[in-house]
Amino acid sequence: MEPETKPSSRAQNFPWLLALLGIFSVLALFTSKRTIAIDTPNPKDAANNDASDVPPTPSSIETDSIPANYCKYEPGTGENHAPWWEKASAVAQVIIALVTVGLLIANLRQANTTRRQLSDFETAQSAQLIIEDLTVETSDSSKRSRVKFAILNAGETVATSIDLQQDGSGWHITPDGLISIEDLHRIKGIMRPVPPRDGGFSLGPHEKSKTFDFDGPIVDNLIRDRIGNIQVILVGYKDIFHQSKWTADCLMFLYNTREWSIACKE
Image (cartoon, rainbow, N blue to C red; front, side, top):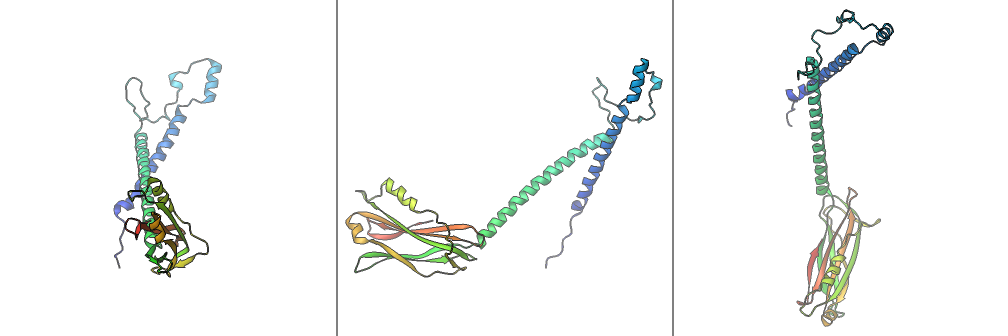
């Protein structure tokens, strides 16, 4: 069992620092409003002055309520003699803004890290289907090919809604024994995603399916007509995280060697 760790004194003092900065801000706001109230002339006094048209004398201005250490900005001097608490409030507000931005950046980074960890966990725990034992057998009597394969779930959880599809294509071999560009693009188009099928079968973790098989082309006809051929197995399924996945594999008949070869994987 790991020893219990206590938060550092720095982490414990951090909320008190924010509270102290907030108190400075409130004091500065209160003082600012109080100063504005002192500088604003009384409407009743202004009305009396207008009625009498007599300018106020210096002795009629109340100066007792103005703090002795309060000074306005003096034009031409280039100095601002603001009270110390207003300066402290400005600094506190800047520090609070910087701390807020820093906390926001830290939270965003933590969220991205959590998403990556969750994605890695799902990848490690999700189902992973693999096509195995892909072979072609040729009947001695009919000379027709027979494609056989099985499916293995190499993942740690069950795969559901499994769907199997088979596809194929042929092409004429060029005089130099190669595949034309047009046929090559068409062959690549066969390797396509397959969606899961509702009601499809399931495979548990590390479980292998039965052996599937289907008819392929007649090899003698391929040789006679100088035709290449590809047989593709497509598998769609769903993992326990409700993510749709697919895999594929294929066998290609190579005209030059007269043999079947595993040529591609998804």
